Image (cartoon, rainbow, N blue to C red; front, top):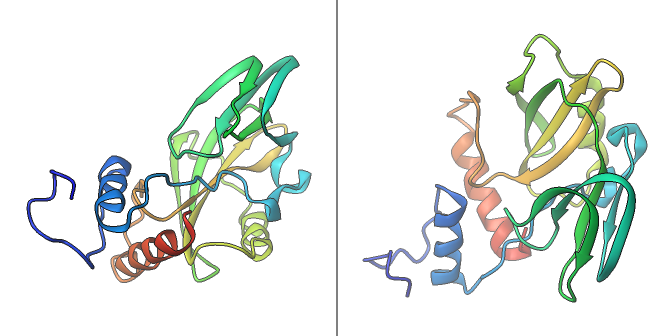
Length: 197
């Protein structure tokens, strides 16, 4: 058992930082790696992304322009802006064109319903297209019971999907529905233990 857990907390639901949750999963569930959701296949559509986004497996890639890259195998893994990428044998990376983000919002989803929407950086007067967010929620079929959609807004492209997260170790940025937040944490953690994301 991990030395940070002085007592037996088997059967508990952890809530805290990603590092804390990862240590709990390793100690009580033998789960070493948590996969990020990033952008699920259901939402890999230009209508939602407003830019080119692909996934790259093992290989060496030279791009014509700078790209945003993010690990798709390890939560809080490598993120960078690069023109060259080497993906190791056991790796997978999300590769995205760069897009200007003037305002960033976090949409909170529980049981396929939008239950909150919070601005967390940028111009809070640039409100996202809620109809488009609800359309994303409707399209995302293989989803956790509770998750977030991070969306950006800019003057040229409007609203676009940045990434998705299972609802654990998730910043709430003022979302404070205390009636459902505990249910979201519990259902997300159980989904994580069963499915690994």
